[in-house]
Image (tube, rainbow, N blue to C red):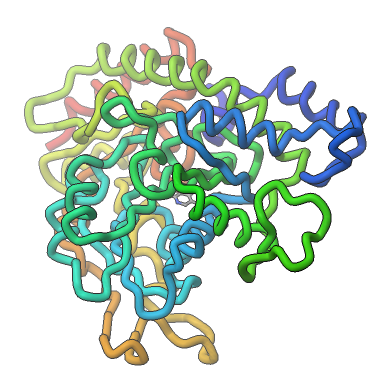
Length: 414
Ligand SMILES: *Cc1c(COP(=O)(O)O)cnc(C)c1O
């Protein structure tokens, strides 16, 4: 079988990406800004922003250079900073948590449920008078239970930042993820649903948030600047701009989103239909079965022993071992290794409240993850615990072969 790793978009790179890229090279404009009236200036980044916004059915999009900078930009747009608490699940890629830390705010880790996304009930328990926002993460292509998340947010007047880095194209009750909360962040890293190698996007329906997000990502400039706009710059920003080469590939990929999702969903369906799942093994809860990306298939075993046996035989590991996707493995957080001249957000003494980050502080999350196994459908990534399974190009024969192996292993579990 194909030894290639990556997300579904990376398996689909072809002529379309090449054509968009050649346009840029031939035109000679690699920067996202250029002479508006020069036909050689291809405006790929701008076109990507417009097409991605249209695809999601949202007003505004700012293309950035990674999912991490997208999250940082969302936090900056909302004005989240020192002393503010942001509730985030303990099962997420570390960037969700680091973006909060680097905003000098305080990440408050919350439990997941059997959907492997934020448990709405636990959000309530984690709210304090300092809570400013909730960051639901649509993990493994599965939308969070957004009705419940939004209800808590409304009750407590909190912002909602959707981390959609693993779920581009997923929808929840008819709305694309990223369009439900106040602001959403996407990634185009190679392991995500669509890719440009690296890249990201911030989306919102709120013009003020858009203007602040744009400014933060581009040295304080107003959206669609021309020239340096002396006197018009509204805030202090950084440079997280996407360039035209990335924009070209991103544009070709956003046009493939529907094809990617259709393929993933049909391959997942085929694999599932061939499986004989014992009564005590479950699939994870899918909060919107019509809307998930279907990038992975997750099995939840009745106990740690049976999950370990399955993992070992399959040559994979339980999700609890998936590196920096689980708070227990984030030594930067647990070990408080931040420069000493940095107001240490982990101690939080400066903010009058001490928060500690310890191993096994989220017992429900630990229990679920040590019993769970990811099988790849479209995201082939050892780091995510999904080196075993199929990919978006797998043939029916390959799917049948993997199903046979899974069924065989399921018969062996204690
Ligand atoms: C990948 C990922 C990010 C960060 O995206 P990058 O493009 O790699 O910076 C953030 N959050 C989650 C949940 C991710 O999976």
